[in-house]
Image 1: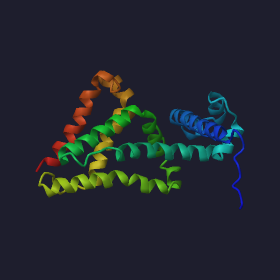
Image 2 (image 1 turned 90 degrees about the vertical axis):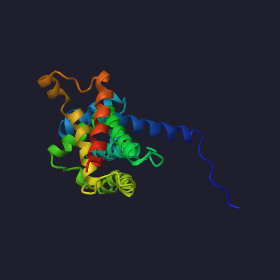
Image 3 (image 1 turned 90 degrees about the horizontal axis):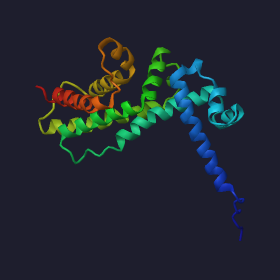
Image 4 (image 1 turned 180 degrees about the vertical axis):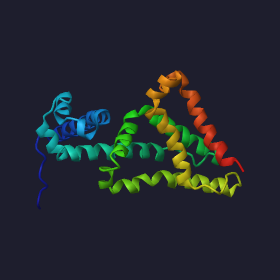
Length: 218
């Protein structure tokens, strides 16, 4: 009988260490790319912060461009995963769409680097994201989830029929992105800090009110 090879002693811990190191590099790289953009970010800085080396980063990710693409992919997967984990099937359609809108607001508020990465990509006309065909499939999970809620609402004669799931996704995204992308200019011009924790509940409720009222308006 052929025996399976016995893993070398310490193999599992080394694997865990490698995964932990990659996760740390990805976390720091997300912050650096969101702050400085692709051109301004320096792999040497990421290596220094993570106490690794540029050579090790290239070994794990293949180079600066591949690292940036991984950061982008991870950022988009993050928000989609949070949405898919939301349990709304037992809620009535109006409460379900409100819950989804409010969760999206919370996620954007808690992950400002995601918005900065999206803004940078748009400044560069989506140069890098166009290389990530898998993200098109990931992205469509959001409107698909909204479509299911809309279908239930229309079956109960609650929701308007002249908008689709992409329209709803766009409205929710626009509000949430504004809260992060424009917070510094908005504070200077109007004296209101959109990042203020005390105002968060108010802005969150506004998001739910806007979407649910818009969809139920005849």
